[in-house]
Image 1 (cartoon, rainbow, N blue to C red):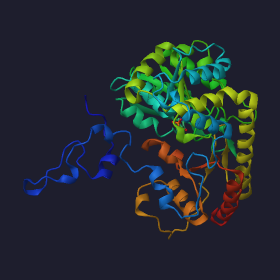
Image 2: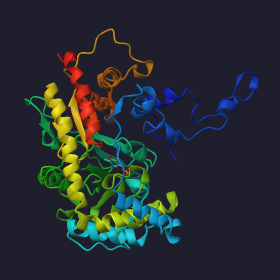
Image 3: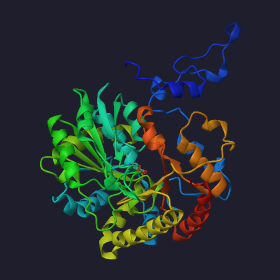
Image 4: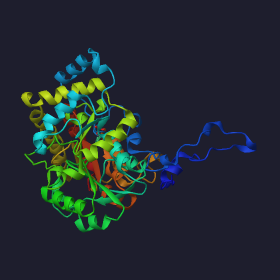
Length: 452
Ligand SMILES: Cc1ncc(COP(=O)(O)O)c(C=O)c1O
């Protein structure tokens, strides 16, 4: 296999020989680095110090409120955890699930999603349960990418895409969403636009896939029908597989329409739609996700998934099935949107009072704060691990250490060339209870004295 393009940054970070085992002086073996690791790990920023390890609770003040990482500080609904407990007390769900997923979950997915796809989903051929959306996406890349195949993704992108693509021999191609920075006041997801000429220029004979994440992490953008139609037309023209990452489809606000690209004319046959029980049921640690698509995409993805994990967490599939089965009669998703809407409002109110610009999310649970007006004292001491990182890393560090609220610098979700777009933003998650968000909002008011 040809050696994939190596990350300079990753190679430098490890200080190891990477693909070669090290030999010590005088021929003595350096036992700290006996076995050479795969060159694959030098791709996709896999070994570089990532944003999560920098903005980790261990590095931040003890009482810092964590709005950085995208997991909830509340439990899944009790009737769903009750179902998990019940599954653990029952013999069958404690054993291997079918690699396609437990039938009960596939049936629940078919029933829940069928109407929104306007079709009856076949539980044997059109649904694949995976170990979180992540692993489902990894399986699709394994199933479809040849060495050097290009995958287009919009920036900012969900960081896990990158190594998932490069580990499978693919080459990421980055197309930034462009924020309308000349707009007065707050932006919305609609103000982050695609330059379709730029998107067309990104296409090449090696383009195999495009990832469309709507609602979008971290912008909160819900792609419009018109945008999706234009992407669909390009997918048709260049014969692309479309990965519709819709893990936040249950979190769309203000009665905004969530359009599934798979539903546009001709798109079902080339689209795989990705879902996540983690987002749907506040259970990100359960690692249950799913793929929905035509047999021509699901069959190869199932083959890959079977050889990667064989099958996914069985008892929690059962609980996720109960979640989907009962959601409608309990009004669960409607209520969840109301709760997240309230959480969103608390953080928005804090940013409004601060007088800082932000992007109002139409979906997902993130708000981007424009930090370009922040003036951090020139003599402020940053840790060495921030050397060479963008202004946003420094701003997020400062806010975490001095104000006590952590967020995530958005340049992490850009390639080097487009990094300056992301450097103006910090991502705050509102997947936290209202009380925590209120406290964070109050603390954030102390930023006022640093705004220029
Ligand atoms: C856009 C996007 N896609 C996929 C995932 C992965 O979902 P899961 O936790 O089910 O693997 C996430 C998680 O944060 C995400 O934000």
